[in-house]
Image (cartoon, rainbow, N blue to C red):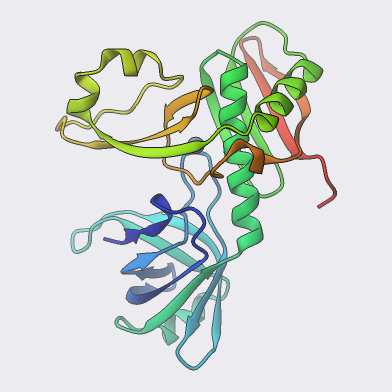
Amino acid sequence: MTEELFREDATLLECTASVTAADERGVQLDRTVFYPLGGGQAGDAGVLRLADGREIAVADTRKAPATDSAPAGVLHVLTDPAEAALLAPGTPVTARIDGARRQAHRRFHTATHLLCALVPHPVDGCSITAGYARLDFHMTEPLDKETLNAGIARLVAGAHPVRQRWITEAELDANPQLVRSMSVQPPRSESGLGRIRLLEIEGVDLQPCGGTHVANTAEVGAVIVTKIEKKSAATRRVVLGFAEPA
Ligand SMILES: [Zn+2]
């Protein structure tokens, strides 16, 4: 089990932690600021710093599946898998993410929520990286790039607060109006006792989401639609990019 600090605070760049497992597949910690690939959002990269100052490069982050002996966790994938030998269980480290990569993920991820608000159709697929983001909408109507760009610019200029909160499935069941107002329906656990993380962009969008976002739409900045593709008869793909040079 890894304490997922990024779920509560997407601005955290580093934390102290202790190694719980390490092998050629990657390293697990008791707590981390590294977001693992999931929900369409790419994993973080960064470094694990040892007490003597040595830095071990983390190329990517994935979810570690549960095993017979350990619950699911977060797997820090090392650039050089052989360096796992330096990280015996119990080793203290400072885990630090690549802040520029995270900030790009936060801006693009929040921008995809703005797109969801502008395009009221179900989402078929989603990919968020540091260089671009794309959303596939299940729809047959054409989309207009200039109209979408004007919509994104309006929502960014509107400086809408972005908030997250946890809700129990029982609370959701007691509030059908809340469920109806969501642009994406929440997943349900078999037990019916799960908690769901809701992401609300005030007055704009509400949906279950576990990713990392900016705190206000103003922080999304200059994000524009770079391409609209007809992927299939019933799929329109919208690609987002940064308007400023990288
Ligand atoms: Zn999200």
